[in-house]
Length: 172
Image (cartoon, rainbow, N blue to C red; front, side, top):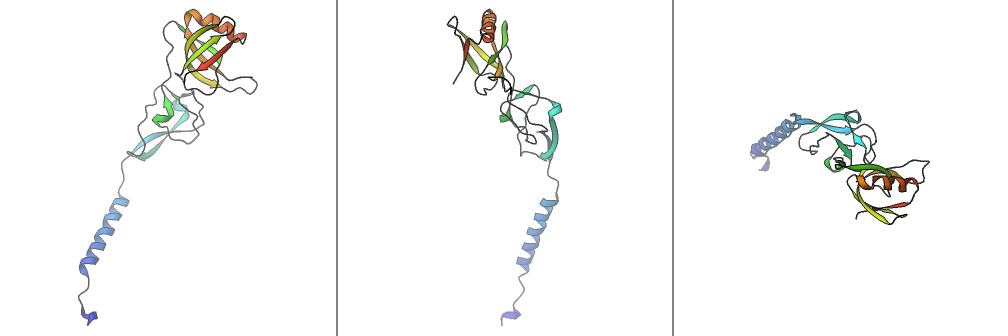
């Protein structure tokens, strides 16, 4: 007779233990830590400061730690996006005795990208580095960014930029 069998106490006990463990894990406070999120869109090369950040609590270990001291955006970032190490970079410093010159820089290179500037009026080639990415001006013909060049070429590069007699090449 099947109905006279002993009830499955072991199964019931196992089910209660599993449900209690799940409830304990679900109701326990997971360790959290504050993480920076952007409050406004940021363009490539723009400095990210405390005024652009909002700190939100996230579970510990979900998002990697990012150092926000003196960083610039490595790419375009949207509002509400968490700040991640892949989205920021340290701004390149201008080497000693070099000067930053506003130039028509093609594309959207990250700060620190090597450039070669060819002065078409003298056929001179100058090696430089992008300091800040190109900014789009609605009224300008080309994007303008800052490139650092050695001091002895700064005046010639600036004059060629004014006369639009130079070509900026980006490193691959």
